[in-house]
Length: 66
Length: 266
Image (cartoon, rainbow over all chains, first blue to last red; front, top):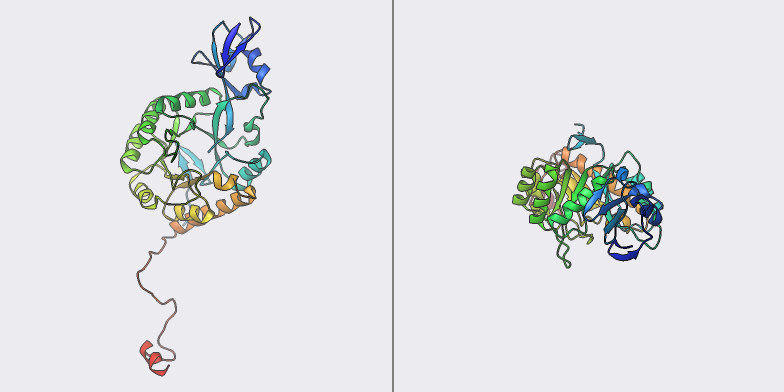
């Protein structure tokens, strides 16, 4: 399954939940905010959502800043 | 006379020092600087995570009593700032947002017009909005009308450590704007922070000058003391500058009746 994550083309095994994907990329899933195809997905919604072919996902977190 | 708390959007703060968390060499310095600054409002930014390596979570270094202020740095227009603010709120770490919209890569000056637009949208959505602007009275008035919790004018170019180059324009905002004025950007030394507070600014936001000092926790403490000193000086009714000399001690009535007498004998 081909998706775009943070602007990068990625191939994923099919039927992974958004929750699983987030946990693959970070040790701090609660500090990561997800936006799927332009819509913010709240924490509690991640388990119920599976990525689809062609989806665009943004994974965002807090960093140092003024 | 005792000082009152800094009140932003109905929330009281003892400290008038807002600290930014960018550019620190390591997280230990960051954690210790937050502690020694006594800051109660700390800014953070939002970025895409690095997919290739597991990154640290900066929030683990920020104590829970501190109010997190998410800045929208990286936004080039109102729409992008609004998107970043919404992402920050979705984290569950609060709804306080510093609007920072920059689309000029040379001077890194904030775009006041886009900042007003973003402030209007986000205030209507219930955010507490602290907009960062190039000091301008009309922009500040538009921000207050939109519901901004503070106005944060820049002292000089961001990260420049040049101090209060915009001093007279900031003074206009202090005089005319009823929400707290937080001097943000360009403050490079505790003396400059004290100067802003002596002018009547309500608070100061510092990042680069702390993060890039050789000893960040120590300069954070120095800034905290300078901000407090400047505030006390302001509250004390700071005497005005005079164009000519005025003696501090009596010059007459002991050796000579007149100062001229001294000159005759010398």
